Amino acid sequence: MQTNKAELQKVFDNMDGLHVVVVGDVMLDNYWWGNVDRISPEAPVPIVSLHRRESRLGGAANVALNCKALGAKVTLASVIGDDSEGASLIKLANDAGIDTSLITQSWRRPTTTKTRILSRNQQMMRIDDEVTDELYPDEEHPFIDVVLKYLQRVKPDALIFEDYNKGLLKENVIQRIAAHCKEIGIVTAVDPKHKNFLAYKDVTIFKPNLKEVREGLNMPIENTDEKELNEVHSKLNAVLHHEVTFITLSEKGVFYNNGFASSIIPSRIRNIADVSGAGDTVIATAALVYTLTKDPDLMAEISNLAGGLVCEEVGVVSIKKDKLRKESEALLCP
Image (cartoon, rainbow, N blue to C red):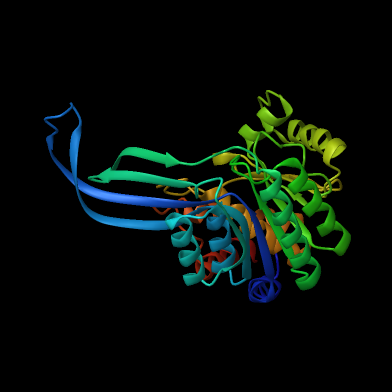
C-alpha cells in the first residue's frame, strides 16, 4: 500500500498520546558472560569464569518495552514472585518508565527467570526457574479485581494480552478482562499460545504465528496462500467473534483479514541477525497503529517493517521509533 506522508507522520506523533496496558507473563532474562579455559576436575563440564552479568525485561515486559519505545504510556499487569528476582524486574520496568502498579506478588510462585550462560558469543546453557501452574484462586481473583478497577477508572486506549503459557492468563482471567474492555471500548490485541488459544473471545486483534494457528486449530496449512489463510480467519472468527485476524508468517511476511478485506504483506529483504523478540515488537506496533487508525492494512504494513527491523540486530531489542518512521516513509509513501 501507499499512504500520505503527512498522515503517516501524524500516526507516529499520536503514538505519544496513547496509554497501553500489557497483561501477561513477565520474565527476568539474565545473561552471564564468561571465559572457558579448562574442564572441571569434578565432572566433564567446562568451568566458566564469569566477568559480566546483565538482567533484562522479558516476556510480556518486553512487549511493554516496545510500546514504551514507540512513545506510549505503558502499564504492566502480571503476577510475579515475592523474591529478589521480582524486585529486580520491577526496578528494571520502573527505570524504563513503565508503570508497575498492576504487578502483584505471590508467595506461591517464583518470578519466571531465565539465566543464559554465554562464552565467546555462544550460549552454553540456559537455566529456567519458573512455575507454570495456573493461578490459584487467591492469586487470580485479587489480580482480576485490581485490573478491572484500573480499567474502569483510567480507561486506557488499548490492552495487550501477552501469553507465554506460564499460568497467568487462565480462561477466567482472559474472559473477564476482555469482556470489560469490550464493554468500555478499549482496543484489545492478543499474542496467544496453544493452551487457551480459543479463549480470547470478542477481542479486537488476534495475532498468532503460523505454528500457533496449526496447533490451535489442528490444521496443516500447507500453502499459506491467501485463500487458505482466509479459511483460517473464518474458523477463528466463528469461535472468537473478533475483529481482525493478524497472522505472522515468518520470512513470508504477515496476513490480515478483518471480514471485509484481506491481504498477505510480504517481508522485505533483510540481513537477519536474530529473530528473538520480533513477535513482541509486532504485537506492540500493531496494537498502537490500529488503535489510532482502525486501518488493518496500515497496521500490517508498519508492524511487518517493525518486526523486520529488530531482526537485523543481535539479541532481544526494542524497536527504534525514528528508524521505523523513516523506513515507513521510504517504503509506504509515494
